Image 1: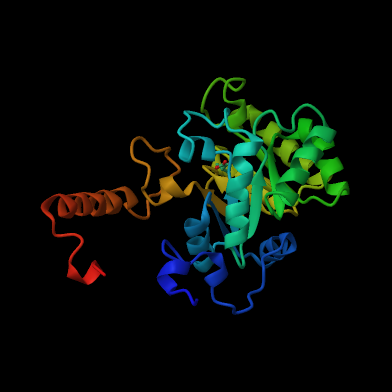
Image 2: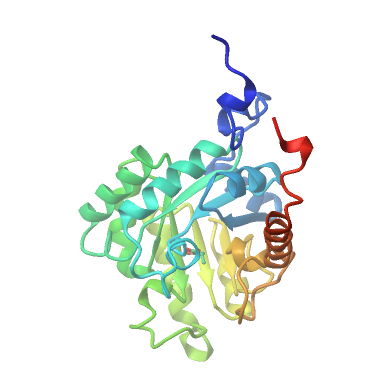
Length: 286
Ligand code: KIV
């Protein structure tokens, strides 16, 4: 018996149905070459298939399956509770859904800090089970041994310095890092992660002039979030940037859309039509 399209794909077309045009995948060395040419690149978080496909199609070079899934998918207040086992299926969904973007798996709190070996083992899971192309971890100088072991073992590592949300309690809350005479700590951390072998570094909530100085001094690309316009790339959490999340936003967030408003309106119309009997109409009825 032959199946109808409705029977084979009732709720969506899935990644297998994506257009077969060959596309050149973004590799870590492409980001470095972009820095050398003075070209900026974009990074967004992504945690599932359709957002990942859309951002990939839009030309966003890097997709981060961030531990911010803790707040943006799993409903926690901070990034601390999310586990490797919770992030791996999201990483797999994103890596299966992209044709071009570089997919970064974010190592969650407690999965890499204990030792370089622990970091290596966790990163291997993100690459084997999650299909990530590389991993990200938080920390500067103190993470150099982890970065060295992973890069020696063939795992590209993106570092993350400045304000590191997993250390929120140790840092005394959400606050800009590297102001005044603590700027040298940011520079030291940036050089340490580059020397250890990181292929890029995220700088979060760092004064713009400090981030600009780091970007000038490093040969690896810098990616800013609340670090001003002089970084080589920028990253935002997509639910913040496109307005799916409502409420108070950090100063560094720009909202490009009102996804919450669009969904709210659509959901209200749907519920109203179900209640008044106008959906489903004859055109939706077999
Ligand atoms: O998990 C995340 O979303 C991040 C970005 C804020 C860089 O680490």
